[in-house]
Image (cartoon, rainbow, N blue to C red):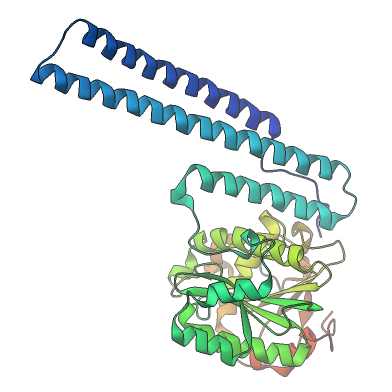
Length: 381
């Protein structure tokens, strides 16, 4: 894995500078409001009255109210920036003493989360409709599950109950569910779906996969629906869903780390999901002990050395089924997003040999399931 450096998304000095600028703006807006009020008082004192003057007073009062509202907004922005600067300063102080790479990854992600929180506070239009696990620190798992279940359609609730799942995130038409021990899991496997398997209506089928993996590995398995996957193969040629999903996946793994710090973390990405997961590791850092790339059309990074995972000893595995048509997208003539073939020897991943079937058969293949459970891993190296 890459030699990791602390690269905060925010700088306290810049945040303090912005806060000062907004405080000055608030003073200027307040001064203009005061000027308008003095003008109104002076006109009243002059005896200026009548239908037309009353309309003029009303217009002037609206100007004063607008300036006062602008001053109030400016003060709030200044306060937010000051608080953000203080929080970022605490993160910086922790980074100065950080020794372990995992700590540095977490601090980088905490800085990014702070940046996202500031953006959402300042501009409600960027607010996430998904209720994210990373924003639910301090909420116990049973309460979180109950809150989310209450927002889901009856059919979705039934599918989750049948699978013995616990809801970690929920939003319009989507939910993230963990199958297995949600109290003190020893290992957590996060499934990142692709074009044909990431639609919320496919949750029952994804939960069935999660149950199969949980039974084979003994791990708790997460069906992560925290991003909007492409709806079809044509849309899958766009890298935009992967870019958006990469940041959300990194934040989700951070939330798992915060809630279950002692659990081993695995990410199993399929199809377009491999681009999401590799981009998360390449651009943000991904808190995973092992990353699995199944049926990948291509990934980010020229080699695994470009990826930032949970520790320097984290592993990357590649699984290619014998009749997977998607692998043709790695051909230079059809290269997806200018991405890298993860099975290329120069990429440096561990190849899991002997997987049979087509693009949709990985989660039924015993060779893959055994490898994921720790049986036969490395056989292809």
